[in-house]
Amino acid sequence: MNKQNISKLRLFLMGLTSRFEEHSSIFKGIKVTFSTGLKDFYGTGSFDNGDINYNFGGSTRLLTVDKLFDSICIEAEKYESLNLIYSERGVDIQITADNKNVKMKNVEVKEIEAQKGHAPQETSTLLNRNYLVKAEDAAPLLKEIGIMTKDGKVKNDKIRKYNQIDHYVELFSEIIDKIPRQKKLVILDCGCGKSYLSFVLNYYLTEVKKINCHFIGLDYKESVIENSRKIAETLGYRNMEFHAVDIQQYKPATKINVVMSLHACDTATDMALALGIRVDSDAIIAVPCCHKEILGQYSFDLLKGITKYGVLKARLADILTDGMRALMLEAKGYNVSVVEYISPLETPKNLMIRAVKVKEHDEDAMGEYFNLMAQLGVYPALYGYLNEDYTEE
Image (cartoon, rainbow, N blue to C red; front, side, top):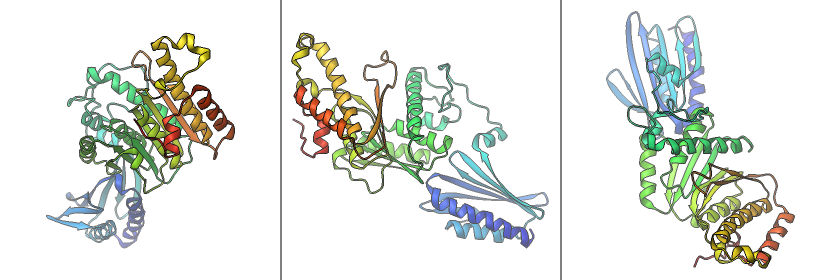
């Protein structure tokens, strides 16, 4: 290749160097084909602890990204043309160069797969909806978390879970679109358990929405944290970290943009909400579960003719618990919505609280909260966690 086009190639590769430095957590690999006449010579690179393991000409070297691209430019001088594929999760960047021209373009991954003759996988019968996490595109992820079989079909007994997860992603995405766009979106999953939801959200934000994001999962069980780490390693999801720690003890080392919690039992939901408020998260999303705390506290003479029936008292306690949670979030400056996450036929614990930070605080909402505490004779866990004086019996 001539020197003029080698210089152009260097400029494109300088852009990829900056991209790698910013998005190394989603870098998958690099493939280079040098051609002369009918002969092709191949180089491949993979991520290795911040650098790239590059194999070419029968030898493997560990190189920084700028050293690798210098090497490629030097090697390109010996050949007539070059085809380079720089792969990230969800997109490939292709550079082609010869003595006439140098071009760069983004190529959707599924386009590359189609060129290889990979047909979309057949799936089980699903709902008649436009899925955000499409089974054929997210197959490696769905197989790893046990929703899809090895031959590419959504398992019959997992269709319901797949539908629930996809609807959660839809509701989550609506909130993400309302918060200021960050250079990197940091999402904290409190009580993450097996982290399936975080893995699916990671896939969707990174590979569909093309958002630079980082996930932090918290759970007090070391076993589930270890399992989450293994899944992340298998999938190559390096933009994730997991910690076996009590939510109350966790102190983030970076700005948290979104705090989420799915079915954290009883006051664990309050721990997650309190953490989100304390770190001034841009958004907080929670699907509560197992309401018990206020049931044993509240009383209201006006309704004693109704609350004497145990099941009605319990249901009202659930409403009061989540209602006061929403009101506290409003008092702390969040715009709050409470929606049905899934059908009540699936589970009665189907409410989602979504909160987006819009101001510092709301004195009227706080006054209303204190008034309810007094009238009902309750001391909610969320209030206690925020004031660091709550201890469970």
